[in-house]
Length: 152
Image (cartoon, rainbow, N blue to C red; front, side, top):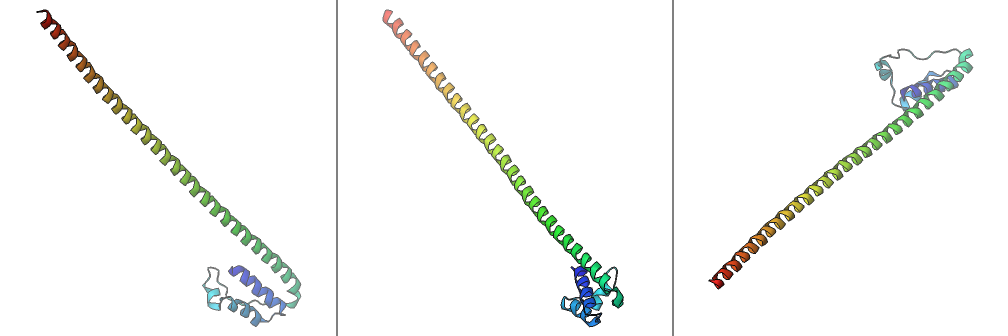
């Protein structure tokens, strides 16, 4: 952002026939002061000072530079959008994965519960069968005793 503001300030300065106040007006309107320029890692210590015979070449080169900055900014924005979409997709995949894991656990739990229910049912049936069998044996013994008593 600062680079494009500096480029625009230089273009404005050149188009105004090198009026340095136009340069500073452009920067100051966008919150850039001399102090800020000095605070950068590669501090800017001096004002631009070009000659009139450089005007056309400077405007041409700065115009190309500004177009390059816009392309970089657009690409950067596109990359950020792609990264956001990748992040959202990753989140969705994690959610799907989590959902699948939850579904697997639910199915496992349901299977385990059905298995327990079947075992209980089998156990109940065995108890009933044993009871019926014991009851049947008791009935048989009573019948045999009644026959024995009848004959005696």
